[in-house]
Length: 497
Image 1 (cartoon, rainbow, N blue to C red):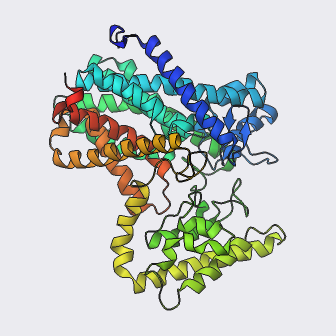
Image 2 (cartoon, helix red, strand yellow):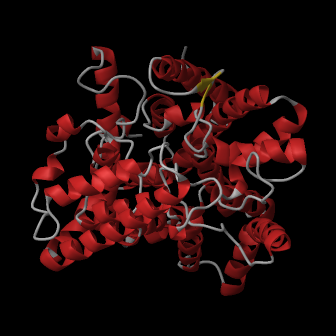
């Protein structure tokens, strides 16, 4: 089949092709997941935070209150972005069917989003080959493909971000206000799916203000139309929270993870994001350790690992992070207390005491490390957190066996994905630095660059509890900027006009 004869504007054809390819790739991931320690429900892989995302919607349908199961307290510890479109399905169908439909919706929407991304790339490069490159790479090799199968916000968040960018660029091309409202709607949904994307509002304002050929009053009008959906839904959510609690809660009643150092509904003494766990994660981050407990070999994974004989697999124990008052034995002792806090045989009051003790010791050890290793605490740790956030194996959480134990095909597939990820991520950072002045030419490129910078700064310098999944939207921005620079300044021979 000669794909060149199909026009890029023929979106039905391209979305169908993308969907077909994604189904093949996702079938492979699903088969791997069924042989791993995942909870499977039909065609869906259940996310760790499934109850917090889905259960309030079930309770709203069944009992008329947006709350967790067996609770009469209105739920406010997570923004309700993932409740759409699940809540619509749930009013019409059973929970099982609704879950299958939400996964199908994720696959379909991501197919539309990938086409929209390819269209954005084509508009900037004026080269069909970059469009084909995009719709080939994203359904097959991008590390977050598997998220379409999970009952979590990652899939919808990257689709919402792409469609937000698409309609924003459509406005710049056609000057139709409806495109601003649609773009603002997807930005609002993105925020309710992933609250940290609130920082994108700042990068969007800065990018728009840098646009020279728009007058100030025109820029203000654009911003008002863009943020109108956000303002509307935020007012509705805040009003709902105030009517139920008498308190002004514009976002969430607790930082997740973090819980403001207390137990909250949906995250109690058995929760991996409870305040004592957060205290240990901050201790780990103080020397630049990896605080993601679900990645084997990381410092936080060591705290959850009950097998004392496997300490040789954790290289951080041999690093120069210890001193008087904080040595390997004291860390081992903290780990023992940490594991005891999850012991179901201990009563609630005793477990609360243990959690407070964990928090106290974590703060104490963190202060000792800061005093005895100031260079590592104030400088090296930030570089290491940057590495933990960006420069990691993006396939580490893929279902199936580890890289070394995988089949040859799976190894090659993972390796190609890793190489592609690093080429795009590192090249974009380098090219952005080299061509800093030229990014002012296009507002969307400016926006992607600033959003990336804000993401990296926040999750490496200010927030000690970052995970790699927070960079999904950042990678999409990097991909756009990467191909923009390739086409405009450093064309690849195989992709020249």
